[in-house]
Length: 297
Image (cartoon, rainbow, N blue to C red; front, side, top):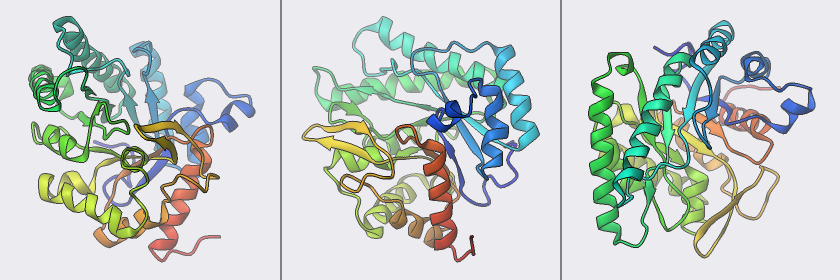
């Protein structure tokens, strides 16, 4: 069960990774993050295992206690090395192991959700690569089901921003249909980058939400994981993450806030801005509050 009393009631907002302002205040330990986030009126934090799972369960448990104290929800991002589409059996099996090791530490954190990148197309056809992705991910779900301690954990395949990566909205929906414990992680910056700036109006965001509702139903759609940042893109998609100060690439959060309110969505929304994650999380919170008719100072 979520430690955040607002989970499932309203959207939750917070940073993915440490903001530059965190270090500027002389803070380095993730153990200080829950209090720091809570003091800014934020709700969640996503810890990235990008280059490997290198946090002990004892350290994770200590951080989890701080999350309990300050009412902060926590998720993790599995290592970036995951590639369920790999034709090499050893690499595909390593991908399974990366998920399982991420879940072990997630459980120690006391968190609920593990985000992951499904894989890359490589030299094969898209169809062949995605078929391998589904097969290996299904095996992973079988192993997760064998571990009673993981019964309350959720795994979240992420929509991706480069053409060579597995992770269109349609592919993520298919992966999420493989298990009750699989929820989508919709990265709107990635989607915008993949399609050359496709997310401009509320209707553009609504089209994605409708696809999720049609494919996954209300529960998973309302409670999806969201990554949101502005991202520079080129002919092949994503290039680099930006901050909300950018006024060229987008996407803007205001149109999505309209759709959150219209459909009564309660997602966990993480900012992946380049160094301003906490500040941009607070900005999204305030935009949502205004869209919902709340008065803010």
